[in-house]
Amino acid sequence: ILAAEFAKDVPFASVVDVAAVKAQAAAESKPAVVFVTQSWCGACNNLKNSMNGNTKVKGLMQKFVAVHASGDSGQQWQAPGKSDGYVPRVYFLSPQGDVLDIRGPNSKYAHFFSSADDVVSGLNKALKQAGREDL
Image (cartoon, rainbow, N blue to C red; front, side):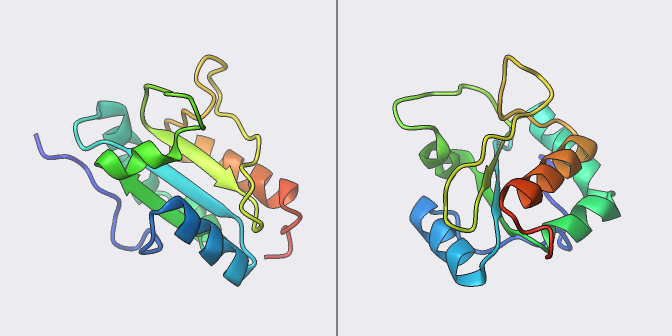
């Protein structure tokens, strides 16, 4: 089974490093959204497939510095001193680089977003919390 990837028209930045993502968000005055996935993860592949066919999520992502941290590059996105131990995880950051408190629908897994609809909800909340509904 081949691992699903995000479609080419899903607008991802080339950076994945935490400091570089924060710097790019600040430079563009945009919030950031970070997707942490693993190639072997069935839920990650389902999320990617769900997003690939969703024009609403792709449109909203234009308003963000969107980042895909796959494999080992996702480890740096763990909260300091924590190991979330699950994927996919989605983090939302303000344009100033602060992690926004936006949780997925499963209360046991705060950063678990399993569908494009869940991501759309998170993106809209992030724009509101970041005060960037004007984007």
